[in-house]
Length: 111
Image 1 (cartoon, rainbow, N blue to C red):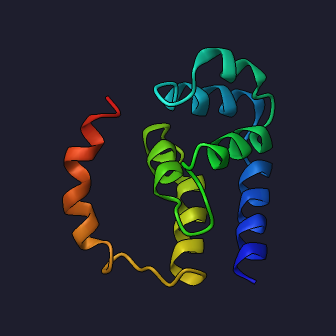
Image 2 (image 1 turned 90 degrees about the vertical axis):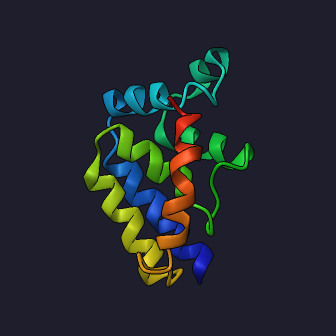
Image 3 (image 1 turned 45 degrees about the horizontal axis):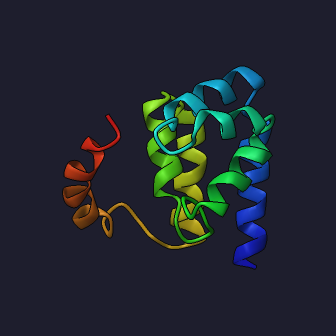
């Protein structure tokens, strides 16, 4: 069921990502997606598939897209992911306190 929930999450996210949004999201992760690869990403589904292929995204690991939505100023998308994480994965913000602290240095490499 977790996998189904995860697919549903991606589906919901995809419905809220326009072509313009996608350009913005792609540019937010251009460090991780070579530009020639980026050309091939035409839809948000392509983008999710690409991230999955490169181990940036799976049903238990959403921190990368959370980061991307955060820097792309998409609190709406971020909220969906956080809800999924707290309800489906049962990882709440309290559990994340440790990772928040360790996240600060790692966030630097995205600059």
